[in-house]
Amino acid sequence: MSWARISVLATALAAAVAPGVAAAAIVVASSGPSARNFPVGKKLEDNATVVLQAGDTVTVLDARGTRVLRGAGSISLAKSGGAAATATFAALTRQRSSARVRTGAVRGETTGAPVRSPNLWYVDVAKSGTACVIDPASVRLWRAAPAKAANYTISGGAGSAAVGFAAGAMVAPWDAARLPVSDGASYVLVDSSGKQVSRITIALLASAPATPEATAAALIEKGCQAQLDLLSASLAVSGR
Image 1: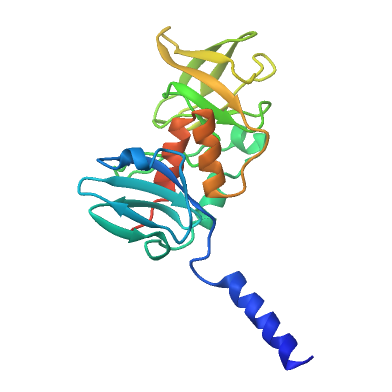
Image 2: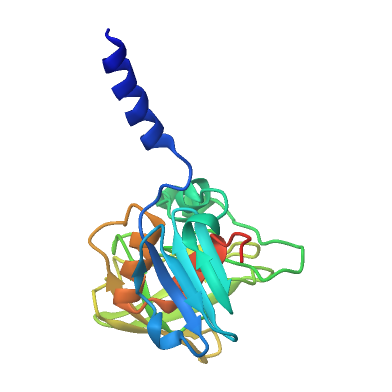
């Protein structure tokens, strides 16, 4: 092999693994005097310089994670990142088997910190709003407080179905055979006393987005705010 050929291959390899190379970032939250310049969903080039005023806060998400940028000053996205968020994102968006959901109890943290869902596609029973799901036949419900057993009834669309959480379990399957999940349909969840806990509207995604920024864009488009907040918090890295 000629030295020229080796040089070309080396250059290509360096470009493929060079640190800091990433897709465009996406704004997931903003506030302050410049908020109108950084609406949620706005995409920024990887090497963009963000100019902020005093009191500005802009939260951006990309393959390196979620970063909160604060003014005043000029901040280069290429220099303000942390470690790649690949492993965290993969774990957060993994679609688990139905068998594991039925037999495995997922336990919460005991550190006193807010408990977050371990999976982006679980539907939080306590949060009203739009929930994005990938597979309507295998929707999982999630709760943050698993100490006691709890029973709920979900109604809407074609009928109703019961869902039960065993003591210590955070995850339970949605009975799609009794109550099919439909795109755009709203469902009311009530507890065993008859009190309404939440109203959830389902938004189906054709497939799971492959990257953090594409996932954020899909959640923003569908209005799945709770999942956007979860994605942003789970991928948080230290930065300016």
